[in-house]
Length: 198
Image (cartoon, rainbow, N blue to C red; front, top):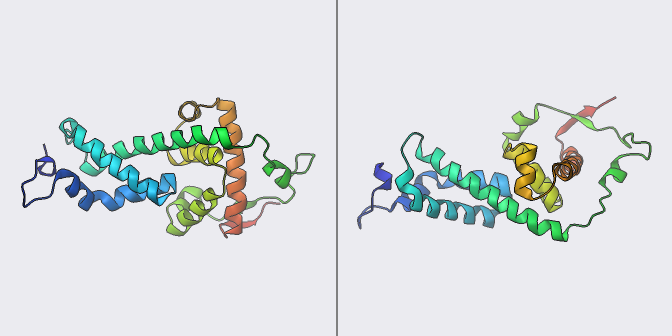
């Protein structure tokens, strides 16, 4: 058991207080980058610390404390996205005109998409891109947003993501396709695209 996990005396912080002081910013940033809501991210960090307190006897120091805590938090984030997806399915309208806005009836682009200025994963690490992506995701219908977060940010495969969201893989692909179209259009308006594809 690490020193951070030992019961506290009156003069030393508890394990949860210690983890919050040492890892709180990293945990909050991790959660915020996945749920895009400050209050939810704070709640998820709190839930993670409570779960860690209950599970602290299982910590074997095979990894760092931060890695262990982020592992717990990742599951909490997925649970939150799954909860949102269930709620969104009941509210989201079936019709979606994003394809009609972007494609002609013959299936060709109304306006060709711009190419990425850089590798998307490299841009994702930049603070400005994260901020723009968060703003753009706010404008994406909830089920579509959750499909994107599950696949692109959590890296779940299609079967795992569709199971987490309670949809079929085909439905997941439709949601993901629509999310990507909306995000591409929004990010292009935010200046994250380069010259047009010919």
